[in-house]
Length: 367
Image (cartoon, rainbow, N blue to C red; front, side):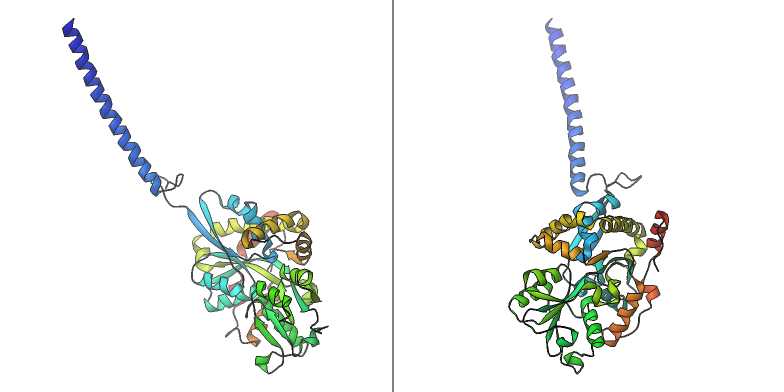
């Protein structure tokens, strides 16, 4: 009986040792797996290797402006994230003017952006083809506002006055210079008497309130803000600025290198962009609150609903970059010394992906 008990104890000890060894081996494996999981995001595993890999990243820039409506709605409701899928991470960066976004593109800090056509042209020339316009985004959406008490009643009234634009060399600046030329006026630096200042949109608003500016040519929602909150008077509405409103105000631009390496991602983005354009154009009022909420996320301030409605009524969501207007922007930019040479528009505009998407949907291609 004792021998049996001893045998049982010895057997139990052996079994216990074996179980402990197995437990330690399993535990060690779990620890190693846990450490690997810390280094690599779950779900990102290279096929056939069993080793986790980093997700693809697309870095995107845009403005907190209503003229970038597709970007605002697409980020707010997750359209872009769904289109790209779980294996792609979107890094978002917000800008307030085109030239600063172009600097980020040229420095390789972002890959794709929503931007005015004139900075896009300048970036294309500076990079010697390193950037491409792949779609339009909005037309119109730019207004000329005079400060109350400035005495300005028409374009001729800008003589001897100070007018602001968000940034030199951007789309609003070039539009203003075209208007001045049409009215027979010149800027001070070209021997005339119209002073043009480079002032960021929020500061234009403050200078209007202080009566330190006479007029400004700005994109929405700033035009509506100047007229509804800063006592400004609408001098030229969006359709009166140029071409009855059929001029490009925002386009989608991408780094050429990124387009070559990740054409599939650009195509997925443009599919989402075309979808968003159709939805917003079909029912602008439906997306006003979404756009306003997203502007608050980016700027910390919710705009009055009537102001958003006013701004939305002045833009035309589109995927067509209106190449004729871009060609005219090139001519005006050259005449004002912003371009050292005339770019090849055939190389600037890369519309093959967009037109393939449009053809699949039964839509007419863009020029």
